Length: 148
Image (cartoon, rainbow, N blue to C red; front, side, top):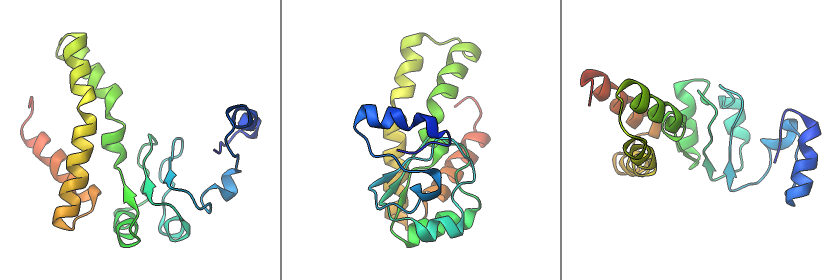
């Protein structure tokens, strides 16, 4: 666990979780890296240092450039696009406030985000494209078919 605020290290201790400073966090040998606060954290330089199998987190715009998606794929690091992982709050809010659907219906759509992510990762693996490319195609399709 790491945080920009070192005072939060006590929470890691309380939870029985190892603490790392932000300066060393990206160099740790971990299964999953969860960027949760900084956009554009993943640069080509940072990705070359990563020793993880998966990157999945709620930080917006995690990739500093489109080339970072290719670098992650070339290193065999699975990246779950933040635009999918992060969609729950926006999706729920838009469905409830703009489209006036019920809580249950909106929540049902939010719980489908896992299926959407699985589809993105499956399509990326099947086509040899990056998850970033797959979500771009999905976004373009959604833009071309409003109200879908």
